[in-house]
Length: 322
Image 1 (spheres, rainbow, N blue to C red):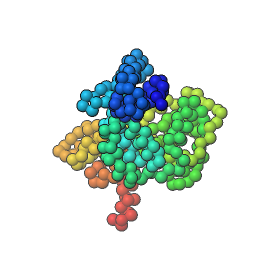
Image 2 (image 1 turned 90 degrees about the vertical axis):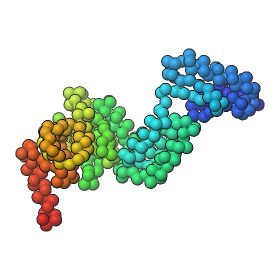
Image 3 (image 1 turned 180 degrees about the vertical axis):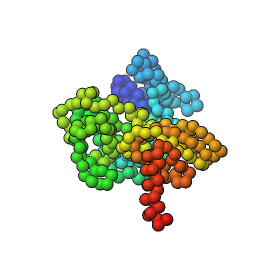
């Protein structure tokens, strides 16, 4: 039985959205109509897309004389290259559960062309098979993120129940300010409703087990302005602590790796293979990174930070009976 023109147009359009090649001959046979009818359908779709650019953007049905079929081209669609890059970042981050990652990957792959989809599947197949997520305490990272985002937008106080890094169970009533992703984890940045209201607190989103939303809302004055971009540049591993300017010497060939790791770092002097750098940093996470560089790094200022590093190295050496 011949399908109605309206239904047929919708089906053909949705097939093109899924990346399917539209062959006039094949479609005519499938729908039991003449090739002229399918040709008119294609022209109607092309006219619709041209007349409604304010809705669909630069979207066109282009004809390939080589393959003798029409393909949908959309400027707003992600390209195959962009999708591959995004999938590689998501896999490497390990921030989502395997189920969430597979769902996202399958949705993104729908934007690839039929010709390139097998290649993309082959490129990421082994990585997805061996994917190991970071252990999560929350049921879903995505759901928790979205719930927090809504509370931030509504400026609503919340109580979170979560596991600290030492696995101690804690409860905090807070004013959520922002969420950000860094070093494989999503973080909630918030301020206490009591105590020091100006000191930002950091919570790993995946460790938040329960969120209770309160009716009470807070004002802009009760939650300080927060610059996530500046925090990302100055803070390593999202460890709390004061802001300070440090100087250190780096001896080695991979100076670019240092500059990449510390966005605020700048070279203030160079003598041969020894670089003197200065950087603005938040918190104690910087100590972990500096110590990981071994003898290639020597902290030179400020003096109190030099002493902190010296004492930490002495405690480390005591572990090895040096």
